[in-house]
Length: 227
Image (tube, rainbow, N blue to C red; front, side, top):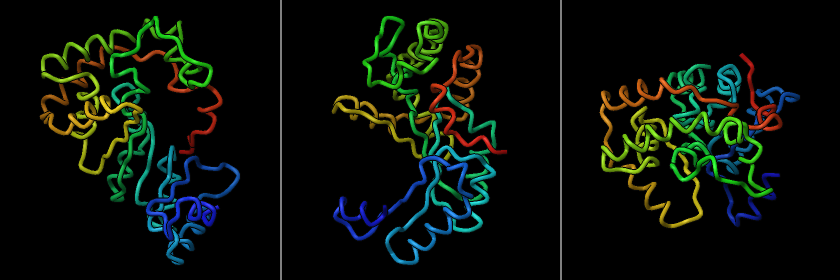
């Protein structure tokens, strides 16, 4: 598979090679060992994991140092703060890469209860975006919009700035298909949130429960919950 990737990418090495989901049928040590061999061959430079538990990260890291861990993390998805993943990455010197840092678009303020999703849009099957739970989650974005306005920023910029303020080892990866959104996201680096700002954001949002799972049943079944 690596050989095919190198051929398609027209390169002789892959800078960061992720196992994007931990395979419950294959010990993570075996995966780490295989990547270690690829690194020795010069085909891969760094090893990454995605949606791995703290225990799996430690087991893999003992075989081949893990450079980055990619998991969902945002103002309304903070599981990694509670399950030990974020703390483990900081302890071991591993970079943390939040995917969906804008809550699959929810934290931009561009989606509401009237939004419909195409057949190919995963959000249509995610409980948080359902007709049942979306109305209950709207107070989150209402508060965020008001706070962003007070800072002369957009909700998306505050959401990204909050992540950047959480640690130097945290590098969010917002996705976008539009130049305007890209430029908006880049503006987050100019917003400096103090420790007091971060505390205010977290304390204020703690008043609003998040309703519904972050993904659908099929996607959630792929997450490594091993303790």
